[in-house]
Length: 361
Image (cartoon, rainbow, N blue to C red):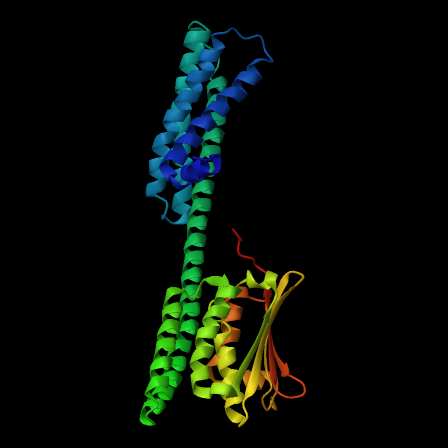
């Protein structure tokens, strides 16, 4: 397992993480005590005194962990009182053990003339116990905040995915209704071959739609393939009246885009441009990379737009507003979705998103 993976596994296992910190902390305490003893002339046996003191501190702080876990949800004033009392009680026991090992092992049973030394040692141990308690609560509180942050991120991610799925799946019934209505019309006028051809294309398109998650991105080349399935369906309806010009740069073909992001734009052009022209019309699709952006343009030569672009998006049915909302959900502020006139006539939709390239094998 890589080093980063091991550290992540350690951090995720709270119990193991505590024991690692506990052991490392008290070893560090012993090391600091030893370095401090080098400033004085101490016998080698003093190392044993240091190790016994660190081991006593290690053992006495273990019960504090379980006590603090039980009182975690107590009122602040009660929590402080219990921590102070527990820290002083543990410090007193530690000081007794420390004094016994020091005076019996190192001083061979000699005792100081007054009790001030004992009090100072207890006070020093009390500060150490308070420091240990502060570190425990600090780390515990930090872990709790991280858990809450992780839960919030997961909830946001799930809501984000649900929103994207909802936006994508809004399009399928809309498109399906229009296509089935067209097939029904072909059957009524006895154009059974065309109806069958249209149904076959519809089946292929829907299979593509179901095979690609709405929250995932796909290469633009695959998006164009799906778009051609849709256009094949529409060409059955419009025959020679629908012309399509596609101009995608080699670099742009490998760029990642939201799946089926262009279909509603094409559908909008067919509905408001091609369908209204007796002689038919043309839809052009262009895509290229400009600096760190992918620029995709869908344009038609229909009647054009008379309303401001924002009003047009709001009144343009599901397609335009849906596309804008999907881009906003995926890219935040790092996108551009603009509608403008396409001279000499028609409408032009331009999408700018960050350029993300699929790895080419």
